[in-house]
Length: 494
Image 1 (spheres, rainbow, N blue to C red):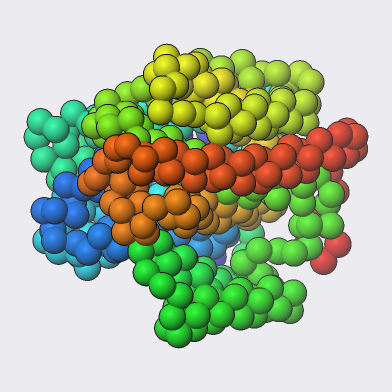
Image 2 (tube, helix red, strand yellow):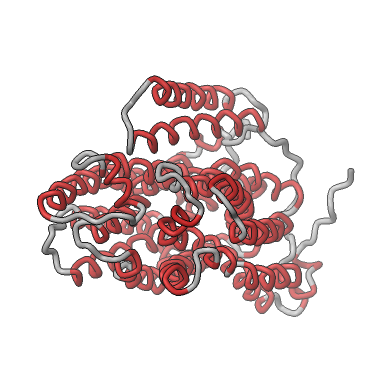
């Protein structure tokens, strides 16, 4: 079968007219996809209690409404990025929009526990197509020296989406129905699909690749086994079945590593790790995800539990941090273009270390304005890290592997996020009963008196654990200094 015709910049009618307006419109469409995916990452958090009550979902299963979405994106990120290299990154990006909108509509119509989780998986497939190919589309649109600014704009889209998710989630769940947190994606999604079909054009060369189904299967089952055991441990004892899930998951992840070192076209090409800057960038993303994604939930647990705030009021306190991050994202991207990605990425991680240490000092009488201030610093640190780290990965990647590199970055970040979510529940259950900790986590219970003191103390340990992960990410980021000054080379055997 002949590969589709390659559309080069010279063939693009917009390019003949100068190209700038078309590039600007393309960036808006890309940001719309990132924004919609970000909305669904945060908006569901506030709806968990309503979903649990409305669909009669077991308390221990309701967090899979979030984990299933993230896990699917984790597994598919490199594979759908590979599809973008094969059949066109824009084409796969547009397909992602369509699948995401369909999944959103199905989630709004869910009728029980199984259906909502299955439809969230469908949404995750669309999210993977959008997120894995967006970075590669940007790499095709912009030269190397301008990608930091472009990734800063996508960071802006992500941050705005997170803010919109927090605000809309609270308003919709409080005044309308949880079903509209999914249904609201459909109208703008249809408009975005039409815009993408009109504005975006494939510019990268097509490369024939194979999908790594054995690798995807072993990693998927391995991560599922470990995550299932960790979430069940949050409200139950370690028994023989859970030990089996945990041990089996670890064995399958080890098998995945063995498979990746032997197949011709692996899901995660280990050859890319021969580029020192690539290895450090991907691992920094992973450890930053483990440390940072738990912060949102740990702070919400503190505000909803010991401080007794409602889910919407607790979440609104964090909105200024997202707004600050949105404002800082584009200039941070421009700084990465001028000074290189190492400095802004490492500074961003260092700021997040300070934030975690501050969160670890929270007490039952900490002024709420101080929590808002800490969240502001956190938003700034996050927006310094993400565009710079994305630019570092794409700068190190060979041009014909942009799709795979972008997918690998999303995979490592999501693995960190998924495990951060599970670790947050386990750590919180150290100081009070696991069942109550889990109820606080999903917003269905509060704490008072000595129990609140004990729980807050337990959260301190969780924040300090996150500090360790964030320090590792910062050290990995700093180690890249000097490596990105050399021209990137295609790793041997890639």
